[in-house]
Length: 94
Image (cartoon, rainbow, N blue to C red; front, side):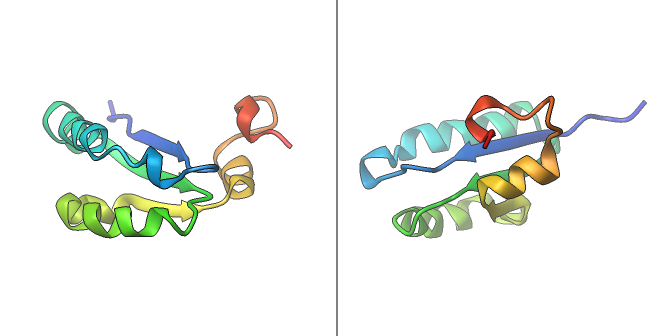
């Protein structure tokens, strides 16, 4: 029997500097690293604004090889590539 992978979707629409919680981000990294090792399949950062880039540059080295699991994309890509019309979450509907 195969192992299921986790898909993390972070909707960054409306993200601002005030939303940058590094303590929470460290908590998430620790959870996946210690409690779900090798289970994270892909992480989507959806519609990341320009202000998110400095935070990403700080965090990326901490993730080491896991950084390669991150994909920056838009809501349309999430809708088309990861869901069907029946399963798409309300926040990603047109």
